[in-house]
Length: 343
Ligand code: PEP
Ligand code: MN
Image (cartoon, rainbow, N blue to C red):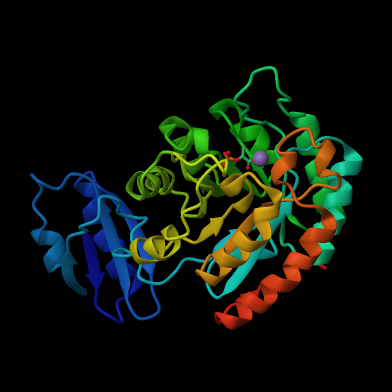
């Protein structure tokens, strides 16, 4: 349920409504909009008396939230959210933000060189897995904390925000110590305990869509995070499993307008996991921006042929630079601008 406050209400009026909500054992979520403040009351209200809230000072009306997700929904917050990406950048709003880097951190030269290259080309964030969720237990599993240290060195040298995956609850504190953004991977989208642990941190969370998850399940997963008090969630479409074999995953760009309609959260697209093929990445990146994506997560490697993970879908430094130029033209054409990085 949403408590819509009258315009001109004071902080005391909102605090009073919050108190009434809490007294009923419900969770509150205050959203201060440009013209109206609303307070979402989350929880089972079937046997609760809401008249005191309805009659409270400066309350305009109570509106039920129809969507199964509440705090992630557009019903609760009508304006798009702009989510911080480290101290100097953000995702959402009118800008297009690009996060790029290798699938995994392999060594110092690889990650620092790629950080410089993507920063110079205009990226705002550096990606790179230190803990890698691998389908095959004999494949490279990532450098662990050593990889996190290298990422943090790359941030010191470039000013890029660091985006890296956290695979389990016991890694949350460690990864949060080094990263600006905690990535929750496709295999963990349904790991509700991990989602809640991420929601207890103050870090921005990049939540990837489960490869078999519906849009509904995706937004409910985001809801788990926000419900714990962390509203800084960026959604990431990374492709879903279908019968197709010419791609690693099928990249459904129609989710962009659908998310925009259902939720205030920004959505970025990962065309690398989304296709599995480097040659498809530039076109799908441009298509995503044309379709209204708030950003991109792109795998870039200095030597894709020798990458330890996901080389087939990684583009070179040179290809990335060329792509960034083209993305600027597409962004312009659809009324967006590229967010300027630290370069
Ligand atoms: C990745 O970003 O390298 C990755 C493992 O992503 P996903 O969880 O989408 O497969
Ligand atoms: Mn990858």
